[in-house]
Image (cartoon, rainbow, N blue to C red; front, side):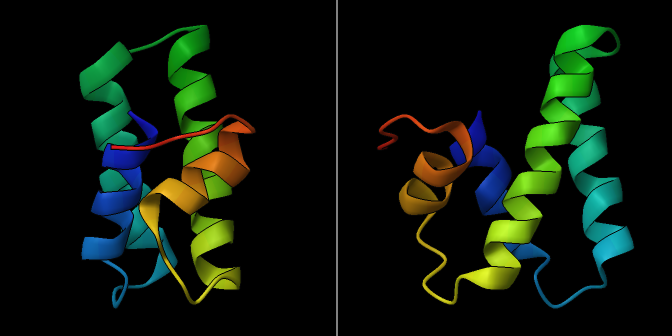
Length: 74
């Protein structure tokens, strides 16, 4: 899921942050609709956006490894 969210965020990287948030929130809704997991998904999206802003490498696996603190690969 994290890798998918990073790919989506990268797709809209040239858009403003509010638009990226909206697109990622919609994706979280498609996964969970509501509840704790939806909130966790949205929190992860916020962390993904921060990492993408701070890291020019933008490697999805690297971003997800930092955000989830576990080794992430395709």
